[in-house]
Image (cartoon, rainbow, N blue to C red; front, side, top):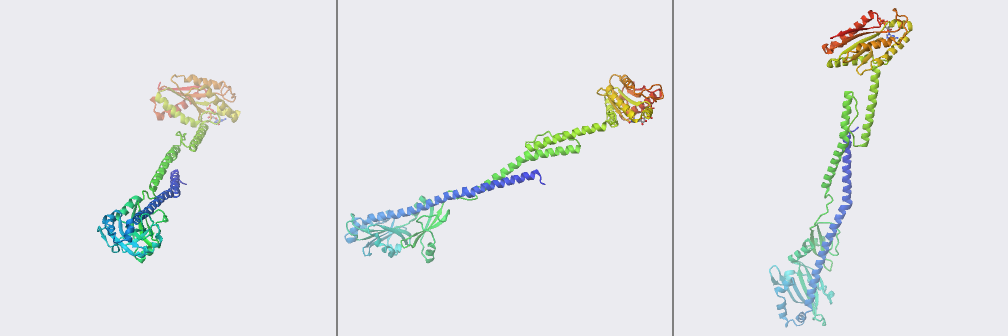
Length: 522
Ligand SMILES: Nc1nc2c(ncn2[C@@H]2O[C@H](COP(=O)(O)OP(=O)(O)OP(=O)(O)O)[C@@H](O)[C@H]2O)c(=O)[nH]1
């Protein structure tokens, strides 16, 4: 069996676990997947932006290249090279490279002979031999010449200085009326400032590398392509993407670092949830403790005290819970019942069975109290012993049953004569009775006399008595104490009894059917 307190604790813990489970399931199946989805969409957008910007760079370079290739000057430079030397001098100055962010310019004839090539070293800010600068594998480019036709084509290059983009356009006159006389190639290096610009737009941290060794190439082949853009790894703060050339060879590896505004974390908010749940559990415990445990404990203590004091009384404090309140009212009904039974038992134990007036036990309880009260208030006190005259002869002649009837008749007479609040009478022996009267007026004797006369007037025949009277009578021995406080508490009552008994004896000796009186402290 467990205490209410442990059930309350158990209930609170179960409730807290239930709350955590509900919140946990909500977080796991609803909230967290939504957060992940939003974060993934953002990362996909960032990758898309990166892909679009890189494509835009290539198309921009293509436009510039196409523009230059369709200049009449370019056309004439290839058809009449000596006449147009000034073209090179005026157009391929360092500022031309810087303005167009070019690291290389190449003019080729239709049969892929280099007509003019120039590189620009941005770190040293000087023109330099293109091959020395970039160490380009020209076959990659010349293999694409047949794709050029009227269109411009572009692609990625591995250079000594890092990844670069190139564009190839047919060189023709400005109206594109003449046949192509060669090719113009512009090469743009992905410079630091370019990367910073892309980073600021895409919100990504980027690191461009080129796979050089066989192992690096093999590794690069396992990396997902930048285009078409996918987010196959899901939400990640870091990932790699690859850019390939037209022969599907990995050209550029991009190490991408995302800077998410918010990283979805499954356990995020759980300390708060635990704290809230714990708090709710504690509040629940406190509430149940206040409503259930504390009142119940209080009532148990009250009942225990009643039991130890052997005095059951109704529980007065109300419960807030219906069932407990019901228990309280049922308990109170039981207390009522016990009190009624107690009263009934008390009455039974203090009443004489034959005459139905108080018995010896009642006398033993009442007499000392009445005596003490009289002493305290110094009220005049009358103690009288009553005895039926020649009752033995009555029994012997009329029978014991007739004696019982006579005793009953005598008992009934008491309530008629001694009916004041303070009057007391009892049957303390076989045919011996006691009357205790208290009054400020000394009117005891008329009362006792009326009682004696009343019994005589019942005219219960007693033919076998030795004197002249032939009815049943009583004799009374009375002691009247004017000032009870002159006698001691302890010895007082016993002394009165003894005196009353002696007075009764005298009354009997002097002829019976009379009252003998002794006064004390007059
Ligand atoms: N019928 C009946 N008799 C009782 C009862 N109790 C006591 N007695 C009788 O009361 C009688 C008392 O007799 P005694 O004490 O000798 O006195 P007495 O005959 O009354 O004579 P005196 O007192 O001297 O007048 C006895 O015979 C008892 O048996 C009772 O409950 N019923």
